[in-house]
Image (tube, rainbow, N blue to C red):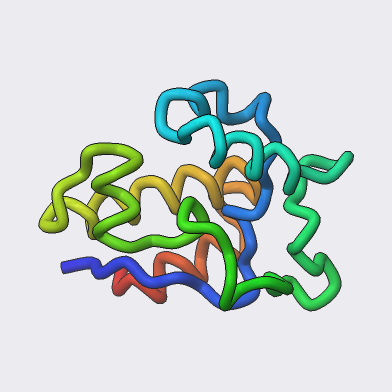
Length: 116
């Protein structure tokens, strides 16, 4: 069975372009939405994502909406903890393919990391 894991040096989830996420207002409260929008750079990437090192510069203090935890996904999407693994895999796969392509190195690394 595949198990969700984050792939280091990927950063696909750091592509925050609001035009790619029209449903933001449905799962972020007004304060979170304001913070989210303040983190979007002119190029659509998070201003805290170092594109050279491909790492988050605020990883330890990143907002809750940047974390894949049972609590966050239940609050934002109504996903029960036992459904998190499958939901997170689907979300990551979709985002990685949208940002880098389905045949990208990031996509291949993700599939290998989750055990497929």
